[in-house]
Length: 302
Ligand code: NAD
Image (cartoon, rainbow, N blue to C red):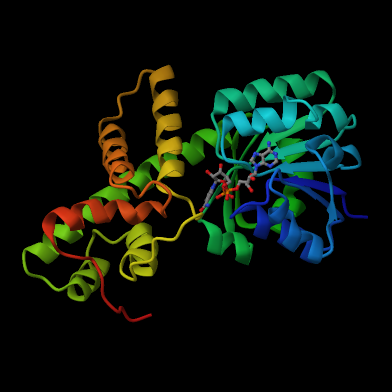
């Protein structure tokens, strides 16, 4: 018998992740503060809840996929939150990208009422959420992770157990810190190359064969920047800034300087000032394109 799941937060990532659980036969109750976000899941066969408390009530496992730390805190500890409805021995899997300190505080509160928690933030974005091929970094008690493996496997392809509670968040924040810096580095390099006379498609091909190749070049740039695709509601600039800020806060707490993270943060701040805050975050390239008067666009071979 598959575990009953309560899924909270049905946005760009949570929506398709919840759908994959449903497709794999998990009985699912869903909740989002925005009604329209619940609709596609209800049509696919999920049961709707009217609060986080209700979503947690009959669930063996509760999954949260929310924007950041305050949202997870509100959903779990707030009025009508998970803590009011959850049963002893249930498990909370928080898959949001949040502050590891918040993760550890929530875990402590839940353990006082005999509820287990693991943190399991994800990498690779919306396409991987739809395909069920996310990378998932898991922190927490190992036995609880083992119990949750089949559930996590319906949403992700690569599951990495990385340590105690909060360790998943630390890994995720570092992943996004490095990625956000790489996106800025690619923006500078590509705009420079084009301004200095090399065609955008030629530059892409050459760098793909060189040692500057990267996941961000093959994904963020090839699939989005080169196509001029900077959608709304898909990991906007404001979300990458949230992650860099959380990484910087973590760095400050252990006194490790972050030169390039600080610079990247200012580059994204420039994108917000230019009016691009709600766009997919590689839009940061446009701030340099606008200054240089060139565009990183071409029809690339698929
Ligand atoms: P989103 O903004 O699209 O979705 C968040 C959802 O949570 C929204 O539908 C919102 O209405 C809902 N919500 C907010 N507060 C709530 C509450 N108290 N109770 C119930 N529902 C509530 O965000 P997303 O892109 O799905 O990202 C979710 C998390 O995953 C974030 O932490 C993000 O950093 C992380 N993430 C996103 C991506 C991506 O590419 N979008 C990739 C990896 C990780």
